[in-house]
Length: 376
Image (cartoon, rainbow, N blue to C red; front, side, top):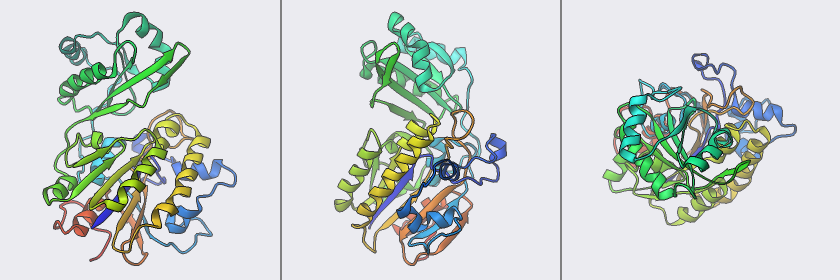
């Protein structure tokens, strides 16, 4: 048995009933991209069922099973979304700080032998413009956060080599556990003042999750191969192999390369939608990235067999037309194929229905949270 679980990072479809609690009532990543981009179309996804999910008036008969998923966990961040997809619902959200407590920062500085500058919320590019010159002058790593539960440390590769930055972040991860901070993120960069550029050396250090369907799969002897930042999100738990990628193009090529010999689950995240275009509120770039994925999809699906399973979904929204630079609380699209006849899946009450589906397909027994979308 082989299956692909493909996360289109941040490709939400609006309509979350609790969006107002997050300041996101009316946010709709896909809907607003369509509305803001004349002539925009994703013909392959639309034929599979995206047009029906988005309730387009002229939607073709879907070729895949289609529906929407509603997040049950508290939060709208990457870790929360992925963990729920893997079968863990968080009743208590990760902690978000405007400024990290002095006791926490001091403990990390003492153990790591560093002194940070910053410690405030900023976008990743703005903080380099603001504090990059001081960092070059003093050698002090830059500490910043966002509206997510993230403890981000940026450093120029010529001042703090990536290996050293990763050591600092590993120390920070241990201290951030007690504060329930979802991720510590290493952000190496290069360049000169006015032209700083973040490199592909980003590394995420997540909290260790509770037991997920990934652990159940590996315990049953199945391969779970993470592509992109999947292994980081799950702190390696339940992952038997990992192939990091730097962008969507590399991620899609990796999926195509690994699929033919796969026996088990290929769990992939395509991050460009979120990282490069959602947070930067770049509608045109987001639309182009979606078109690129849509053009690639038929080539991959041409080698998918009737006994295989492909699930395409997302972890949250990040509406590029929305105020601010944060993720947006939205429902997410769900496409499942082949999985038997194409059927409407409705609006699922939890992302954990994906975990329940994987548990059913791989004959692991009933998953305690969620319901399988496929009837055996």
